[in-house]
Image 1: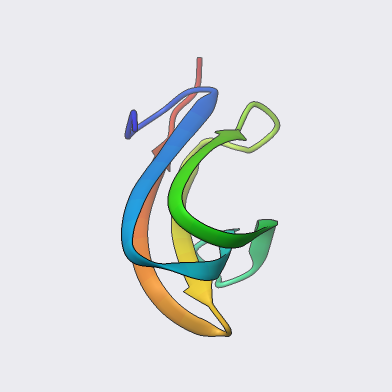
Image 2: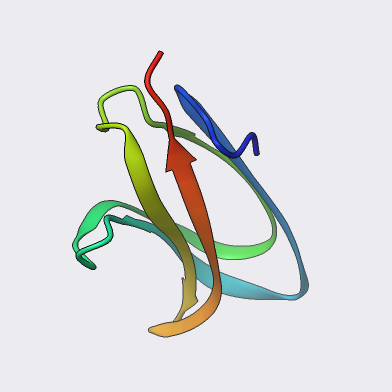
Length: 79
């Protein structure tokens, strides 16, 4: 949240079990434009700075060991 956003995306997730996680932001061509490995997590509270990204639609993907757990469409708007 917020979604859409101008500058910063706050990602908050609560998992049922602790897992090694990776967050990815993809453009609509499927290219990974941002990635962060979080390690073993039960709760995620991560800020993603989007100031340098162009306005448009992106996909936020949460993965565990290569398996996609969650996907959310994210809108980045101009200031």
